[in-house]
Image (cartoon, rainbow, N blue to C red; front, side):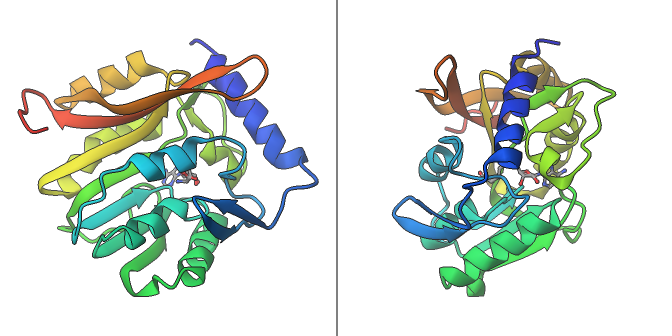
Amino acid sequence: MDDTGFQRGNALLNRHLTDDRRPDTFSLLGREWDLLDGVFSPVYTPVTALFSTWLPYPPGGTFLEIGSGAGVTAVVAAQSGCRAVTALDISMAAVENTRLNVARHGVEDRVRVLRSDLFSELEPGEEFDLIYWNSNFAEAPADFANETDLHHAFFDPSYRAHSEFVAQAPRYLSPGGRLMLGFSNIGNTALLTELCADVGLELCTYRSERRQVDQRTTVEFQLLELRARHSSSS
Ligand SMILES: C[S@@+](CC[C@H](N)C(=O)[O-])C[C@H]1O[C@@H](n2cnc3c(N)ncnc32)[C@H](O)[C@@H]1O
């Protein structure tokens, strides 16, 4: 296992745990947001702002976000014309944080927020026009345990959650629906490609951008589309 992603995940986790000036509100995308303790902060990396801006929100359609964190993307989706947004997170603090920001921005009528391990709390037969996860793409060793809810924001031991995500997500897509993953070049692209191939999906880069994230590290942030192999849709 190349541990670049694991090291970067640890650096980001430590920043979350040791920043004694961590604010309880922040500005992003021209809006103000609440930020609770123990929730992935969209201010330490450009990832939330990039993906929230790039996503092709379906006008009048339905959007499912796995891992909504502080709720920025879910709110932007609702404000960008989605009819119904479902925001799920395994972390109760993230669920509360998303609810706070949904209320702050007055979009409660079209955003529902649930605590859920991936798709576990969805009803059978639910379908969405766009499914998206800004994932915990730092691969961690198989014996690594996500000790706290916050660990889930960064680490996926052996990509077990990614494996479940690619296997289950297609059954929640509406006809013509799109499946997207927020990822980066410090994730394990080879393993993700293999997991996708196992379930008949291929990875396409929808949009990407390189950003310097600290003095020594440049990361290419990638919004990936997972398509059925041989699909001709664009
Ligand atoms: C990188 S953070 C992204 C948070 C937010 N979407 C953003 O862009 O700021 C990944 C999120 O996925 C959530 N997550 C990790 N594993 C999950 C799972 N199995 N089910 C649901 N959410 C999960 C984490 O709790 C975290 O909030």
